[in-house]
Image (tube, rainbow, N blue to C red):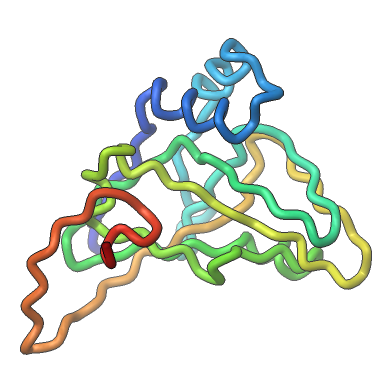
Length: 170
């Protein structure tokens, strides 16, 4: 098994700013406590492909509701790899919890963005059974899988990323 990546926390400032912008009901002290409690993603078993990302705070998501979660995590990985994010299998199966972009794609150069490569997760409870998703702080809610990828023989991309969504098409 190749070791190609390392998870890091974003800076406390990056996490606090992102959280207070998205969730103004929390105080700065609340968010600093969340930051101190952040756990880096990890695999549950030796045979697991996915690295579990843990919820930085508890949340409840009724049917048709959406939430954007700053994870406080960034990832440094080799250039020819990508991290793909999916809801944890149980949450998807039991509640039809879905990523808004279907699969989160974290490119290797995102690590160097102005926002420190802060990974955000936007989820929707797409339940058609009226089920509310309850996720406790510190519980795994999405999983990331590293995959190697190739490029075409005539590829000549020279652009440099600075940002997340839409940054490579500007």
